[in-house]
Length: 84
Image (cartoon, rainbow, N blue to C red; front, side, top):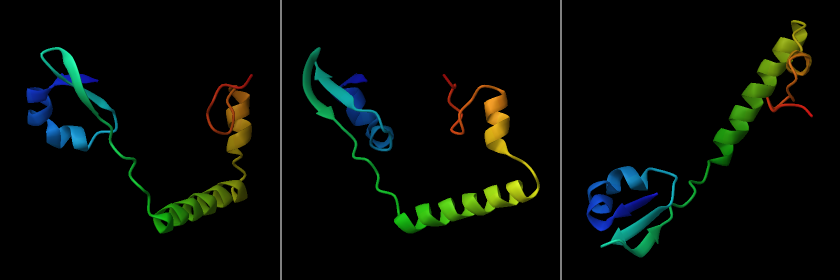
């Protein structure tokens, strides 16, 4: 995304919360690039989420629901991507 110095300054709050790099220009010339840092994830939160998903999947399998088979039946991988 490109924006002038004035717009960059006015939208700074929005820009710093975004994930897209911003090319800053002045009079049409590039004067810099703002590249947001990736936000680190709390490993404990990620672990708890993964465990919760695994428990839910086990519950569904116990009920006889096989999502991998359902996805394959409509031509998708277990990740929801089109199968070759």
